[in-house]
Amino acid sequence: MRAYAISGYKQPVQEVDVPEPVVGEHDVLVEVRAAGLNQLDEKIRTGEFRQILPYSLPLVLGNDVAGTVARVGASVRAFTPGDEVFARPDKARIGTFAERVAVAEQDLAVKPTSIGMAEAGSLPLVALTAWQALVERGKVMPGQKVLIHAGAGGVGSIAVQLAKHLGAHVATTVSGSNTDFVRELGADTVIDYRDQDFEQALSGYDLVLDSVGRENLEKSLRVLRPGGRVIGIAGPPDPAFAREIGLNPVVRAAIAVLSAGVRRRARKLGVHYEFLFMRADGEQLRAIAELVDKSVLRPVVGKVIPFEQIPETLAGQAAGGTRGKTVATRD
Image (cartoon, rainbow, N blue to C red):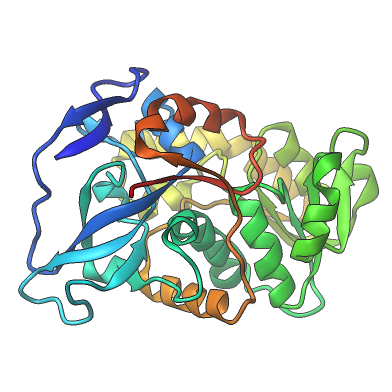
């Protein structure tokens, strides 16, 4: 089976032959038709997350899949061969930049019927991130004020739509050329980060979803109301995350140090900071698919490429700047 993999951290992505996936009793073998490219793929390639995601090498990359069920494990009941599905495989089982991938039944969902494979392949990681930040953790309610950074990006473009659906007043930061685009998605307040300082323009927010980190994260703490919360997906990881994924005590201690400063400053301001690393969840994907089919959420695909262009395209993901998602497809 052909796939796109790395032989070591910071090594280039190469097309290689790999063994066919092992399909367990509760697994579904998916024939890959589309796979979204994410900044996470590039961060894994460079080793940025190797302390919290200690993969064995060589490693097939890819965190999003849409495709057709080829075969199911003996105990699978929800899917049959021929079903059109989408998923973000569990973090320990990534590898969607391949001809086929095995996904746990509980992590898989039938794809939205109203969209094609490329659009479905763009959704899982970013839509689950938005859902887990805004619905599961943030518990966003009508009338609340929510700031979504990088609203034209992969996570941001879905999060803006979802926050608006939940009844929030939605602010977002974008470059000026994307102002009209994010207003169409539902943004009420748009900050051009090149000309405006969002810290000076905004105040009293209930929740911030920060995908930028560093100085942006620090400023985000200061636009919150007392008791407000920043959910960061760019880091730094926090102790709760380290406990959740079962890291060893040494790594947990190191992570506590990494985030100690921002957590301390948040406490002084009377606000909260927490790190989110999204998880695979087929039930949540089913809820997301329903919203897509009701035209509440629409995928944003900025670019479609053939699988053969994954290696050269992936490096550009780290810089951001793409509207929505880039998706690799197969005929």
